[in-house]
Length: 567
Ligand code: C2O
Image 1 (spheres, rainbow, N blue to C red):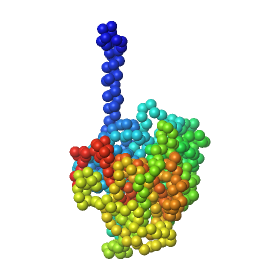
Image 2: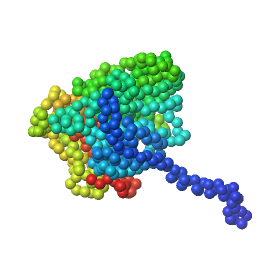
Image 3: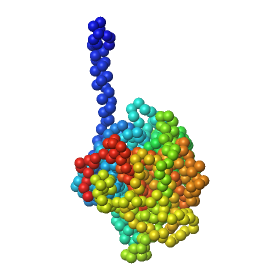
Image 4: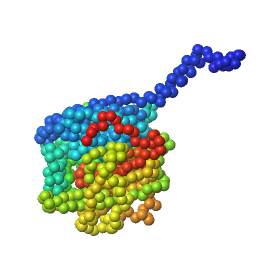
């Protein structure tokens, strides 16, 4: 473009095209989000495992359900139509749903369930996240069969911060009951006892050949010698923390809960319900058949299904008649392995993928985790098991909490959840067996927008110590510290890792120990937090945060979608 002698702009044709191209291009980029659409039909289907056929609730008749493939920056629109007799809601575990809790999914927290014969469209953007997450039913125990993987590819042209794998494979670890899971749970509630444990673990819905009738029900993946594979491993079990290993092969951990981490090599993984772990595996061993195996970590002798599920890693050209080799899994109570494994998890923390750990804390929270017994005249022993945070066992409301918050409906919940337990005691000391007076309530913590929060989750020995994988909706958090025994507010904070702590959405609080997490409350809404052991969640081990709106519409909860299910 040059100035004409008369002082007017003189555009030649080429410049004009360039200008139009440039002006037209900018808004185009701003709206470039690709829309990925999915249809989820909730249907009942007959499925057979361990010589038992039974009807199960599925998505599109698949078990596990379909994988959601998206790219960072995409908009995802998933229409869920419920053809089953159960009320349904689906949670996109780990997706932050910025200002958009309406798409989060936990029943009675962010929405009322989708009733039989009805539909609801989950509509959300995938912003600033890439990696492996998963989706699952978030009502009753229906996630036993209603779950699947979410794979978020990095933006076009952005490579992984590790060697490009030859192929990627999803491995969903799960549990299988021979009988109807909802009946199992009802029975447990009636008696006041834990429901019957699962009959098997599964890998991609299949228990593997160590179980009866399982020849057909074994997941196998074929590998070529010399190639590297990315395994996206998801713990979708209801109640078990799991070890996972592959015979003869080391794994390099590169990502946890859809956040890149500093790579490290290990023989075995520990993964809690709700968590995901991506590993690289190089097929560099003697071509043969190798078992991949999973079995629970049981640091305290609680009754869980301790049988080993297997899948097969098979080198190309090796016949199915070759007997696979079994891996060495850590002993079921190997707490040393568990803590040294967790110590190795560190955020990648590079300029491209920084760990933005809050360095100062606006709000200090200290929640005790308790298991206990409450009176229940109709139960088998006159008592029923109950679980609490700061001695409060959460009662599910009848109306979604997010609606109640947004439309200011009174009387649904209170925001007086205490910042610390009513009285301090020797949390992890000898069993107190005494119930400290667990109360029932729908009590939430109110958090100021954009404040930095530190939460210490402290296990107690009120009934027995146990490890608890805690999941926070709407956020990732940094796991700045963990320890065994009682948290010491004078000594422990000086040992916190505020540089490259692991960033995740679900963290295991060790049995008889504590875990410290930090996050910045920059996502307004009502966000559920609960133990991801379904057993404990149903006993009341849950609460929610009400994160207030900030200033103006860009820092406030979006209005609800028109098809939000009514209660
Ligand atoms: Cu994966 Cu509230 O759940």
